[in-house]
Structure formats: structure tokens, C-alpha cells
Length: 196
Image (cartoon, rainbow, N blue to C red):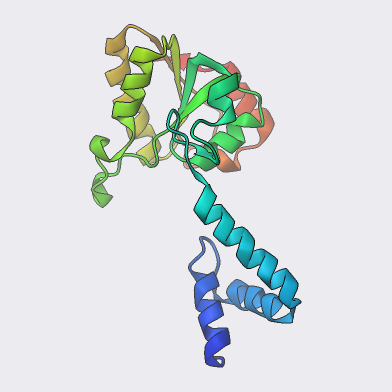
């Protein structure tokens, strides 16, 4: 494939690092940036830098926030906690008005990639259960091999803590990531969640 002049090639390479962006999309993005006004490009660059500098993890749930504790943890029912793999899963579940708070693991168990329970925010979850008077934990990991393994591990671990442990109901296709499930299906899965 044809290489461009160095500044364009560097821009294409930078966009290609983004998830799900192939070379053709990266070229389109690069052309768009080059054809944009300097002000628009500066605004775009400023937004990137500001997000990188100000967005951090909530010290309670691990979701993205621009303050110490996110609005969800400050305003929602902390006795009901929904465990998800990534911050993008929180966004999907908030669309169906879950009502409780979240706990982001920042990954899933994956022996092939050497991701163990110690690599996830499981200790922080146990601490929350013990200190926040949590009554129910909903495990909402994607129905992939890694998601199911993580749900099984957490279900067995949390059952020993004398709290209600549920997981999303079936009806979500196996192999589907939470973030891509439509609101109706996700809402029904939460409503029909099953106890471990």
C-alpha cells in the first residue's frame, strides 16, 4: 500500500492505534484533520489533552469521573452494586436506569493473557461489600468465555459473604459484549436476573 509524506503517515499511524480503526479509516481521519481549519484541529487536540489530564477513576467504583467520587456513587443506592468489566459497560447499563451503583473490574479473567483475580478490582469489591452494607451484587459480565469465567469465579467468592448474588438473565447472545446490547434486551436481562 502506498506510503504518504511523513507527516500524513505519522497521523495515519496514530489513528490506526485506535480500536477498530483500520488503515482506510485512519486515512479518512487523517485527511479530515488536514482539511479542517487550524482552530478545529486545535480544539480537537485540546479536548484530547483535557480528557487525558482530568479524567480519572472514581475511588469507589472505578468508573471514569472528573472528581474523586462519581455522581452515580454519590446519588444512587449503594446497597445494590452491578459488577462490570469496563467503564463502557456502565454507560450501557445506565441507559436502562439500573438504580444502583457499579463496580468496574477493569478486565476479565483470562489465563491465556495471564489476567488473574489479582489483576482485577476484586479486593476493592469485597471491601465495598463489607463497608457499604451492600445487600445485592449483580454480576453483569459479557457472555463470553472470559465473562462467564469471571462471573462464575465472583459468584462462588461472593456467596460466602451472606449477600444476594445475581447475574443477568439469559437472552443475551453468547459472545456479545455488554456495550453492544440494545436497551430493551439489557433492561429485560437486569429485570430477570437470576440468583447464583
